[in-house]
Length: 98
Image 1 (tube, rainbow, N blue to C red):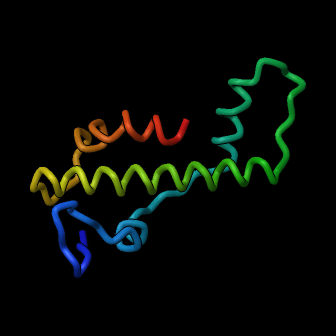
Image 2 (image 1 turned 120 degrees about the vertical axis):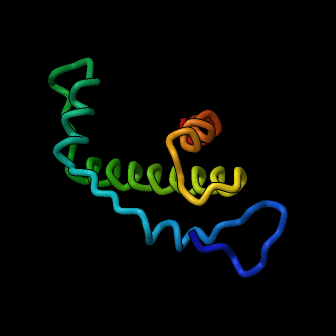
């Protein structure tokens, strides 16, 4: 993980380097099925524009989670992000993305 050229006590990470290393592909069909499973009314429809927007928001959430987990790993002097780093950043992430 690349660090900013200006280092301080906050363990800053270059978000662009994290985002460029994230390989995520969320299929619209999968997101659509997940959403339809939570609809209370079977007649509820989801437009293509809304579905595309939800997929983009989900991608942003994945990117932010990776960024926060990598920051947590750096704080713990680890060079590899593990599941425990993701778990430690989830409570604040859930508050930030209600």
